[in-house]
Picture 1 (cartoon, rainbow, N blue to C red):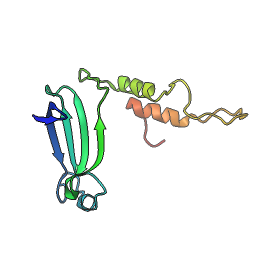
Picture 2: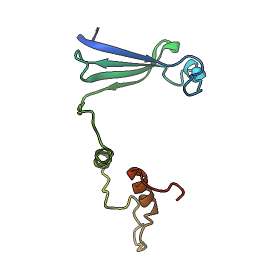
Picture 3: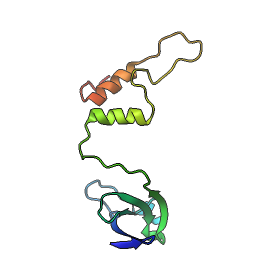
Picture 4: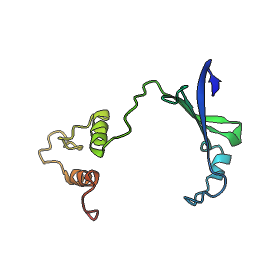
Length: 134
């Protein structure tokens, strides 16, 4: 527990891998040294570890420069179970996607029906069933 802005919070720290990451084979050290990317992520949670408060992406190799800071204002927990159908529904709702309408619209005055072939591919891909050699 640490004090942040006068409130006791839990602090979680994740640092990047130095050198070559054995799981991916990637080496981002030059990006970190050039201050092009964060190498440390600090997550501040409430006292009970129920709600995130802040997430800070910084670069410890360059005077802890802050690359990005996120403050969580509207956090909604869930029961830990989210089906792919519910996820699809939430994404469509979030981005105002009407699943019954094609994503592409014809130009004004164009009477040709829009090509919806990509929509069928999308539906097949999201359903987990479908051929990938479309």
